[in-house]
Length: 249
Image (cartoon, rainbow, N blue to C red; front, side):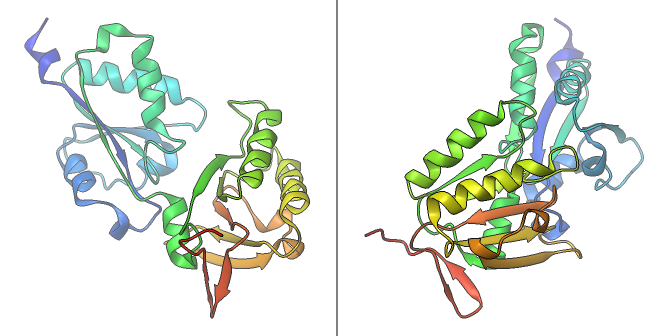
């Protein structure tokens, strides 16, 4: 095994929800020391270019190819940072890298670090107040990697368990009808008065936070830049804020 191979490294880093102030110092330091940054086009675009840094941007649906490329670069001696928005372990690239590693054991000696970031879910909750103040779960509404029937089942179980729920990837141009169906399930299980928060482009200049009862929620209030937070049965307003009490009846 070569010394070059031994000296390579792979860091999987979360850039936070958008504002550079929300990126952790640990992630900033890793990017400053990187020889290569790998990621989805819009995330790589957030990395300032500098001499000696190679940027490898790719499309959104090639996660495994991107992960394999990063492992190869690291095995060749590069100090590679794979970037995701939010936290890399939440519906992002950390899982993809380890999936690629599982099918390519020749890279098992590559040093891998996962650096956490502030998720869109937590940034959105902070903007709204504290809607995730008690037990909660997160569900990705995209059916790209799982059947829609499973999405519906998990949503129904979250309602039955009276969890607050953060919904990622609620609505896209290719599947506009699915979020409408999710709202139907929520209304049937939670009733019309349950609070739902639409948090779009949190921490960016395009940020928009809107909280309404489920009876007023419409599918076109969400897009792929929106995180949706549905309160539990105790979630309520206090002034302009939304919060979920720490105790349960």
